[in-house]
Image (cartoon, rainbow over all chains, first blue to last red; front, top):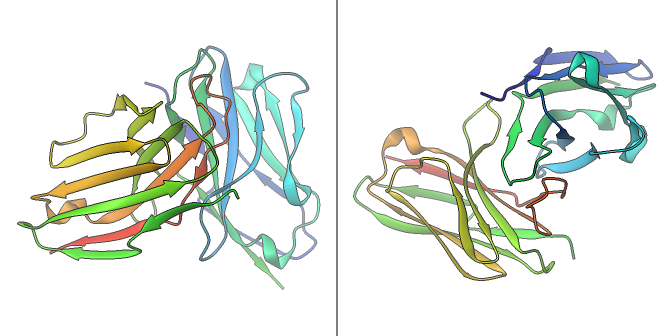
Length: 114
Length: 115
């Protein structure tokens, strides 16, 4: 069965530190990849997504992610985090052959110290 | 308007009650979704409607009954729930969804407690 793994469940960083959150998926075919974020008290929203083209995708608020097909990975990065980046981050995968089913990873809770 | 609204925000019900959750979007999206999210867990897909037809039912117990009266509304009817059904129920919509590339827009959720 298709699965999504996020390596870190909790991450604590100081402001201006660099961030990398890992995401690996198990499906071997074509995939569509997403990072969603949930800020405290807010609903889930899209950070960025990849389905074709340049494997380095840029999203909102300075986030980027790189799709490495050979490693089945889609890691999220930000060079310098801010206190306002404190949130829960979900990696999600959808099979590229179409269909509505998106599978979410367990999530990573990021806390940024001011 | 990129908003998905859900009512009520909180719901407490007994195991013999019947209640409904409501979801609405006015973005012209033709795919709508129900997810269940337990504490500290990711959202799990329950149902998908595409063009007002049920497209996916992820083996959800029959005590959950979805309904899509029109392209803007999605309901989830609840009957004879169990305490383990207590969770945050999220609604989402996307433009079409069939290709799997569409962004899903999520509502704030309904926090359900079953006593």
